[in-house]
Length: 188
Image: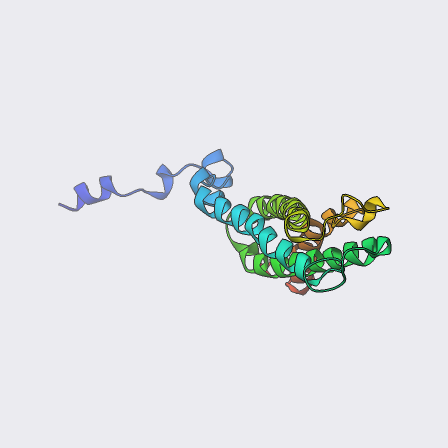
């Protein structure tokens, strides 16, 4: 009776010595636990890209030569118009990065961050193109204008990099602060 139970249990002399691959190395994580689900990635990308529509409409409403400010006949309004889009994309990047911060401890956080930053870049291009289209559609006729910069457009294309850059910086600074606050060897 007891002899049968003893043979089924592992005895200390039956165990493999320490140092074998089975005891030293941890089992690898399955691929499905290290990557976020594809629907999550699609949601991050599409929501940030679709936010470009909101930024475009805000740009059209708030910029000089747009819906409410100016008549669109002044050739010197290109800089304030570009600065309005720069401010809007900077705010959008900070908000997007702040929304991404809670994701940093989940599986595949860096992949989510990269997809979100790509969505921010697409959102910035959508904001530029849709805002320019709104200027053509609802703005004053600029076909007989003396200067090219009278038309509602973006002259400083570097503004488009502010949204993904701000998002990446907020995510990076949050991760850096978390690492600096965490105890050595622990999770922050």
